[in-house]
Figure: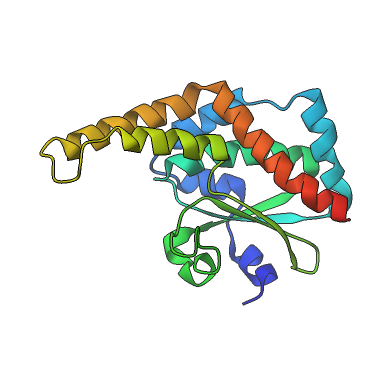
Length: 189
């Protein structure tokens, strides 16, 4: 299948949100509360002339998707990028072409394509600052053999989820990371 075929197969944003059974309220809350600055709007509006689209590999259970999808939706609105959503586990043939570090099926992955279906950029699954935060949180966990490991890990993920739902500095980090990725591509023409 070509990237155009994958795009056509995907759900619209509304279909994806309507299908969500986990993290729906949190995703919508972030969407309602995240905004682009005037400077960000000017930058992302450059996308309008590109006529790009975005294929999103995601799943509603994923905390990173809960964070990044609504932010990318705001960016896509300003850039006039049409987004289509594919559930990771139902689309492994595509997912396996976008593994993180060559091994992990980490999501979300945003694949920017042009009118011909050519890949122009890929972003995801996390902004560097979010990766650093999760790495630090994981380093504080006891060893896996420790009887408290499972409980401590659950607490860590709850804390991470809470933080990404409310901490606007994290939202800014995601916007900045996407902007840096697209800056490189926009400059290339």
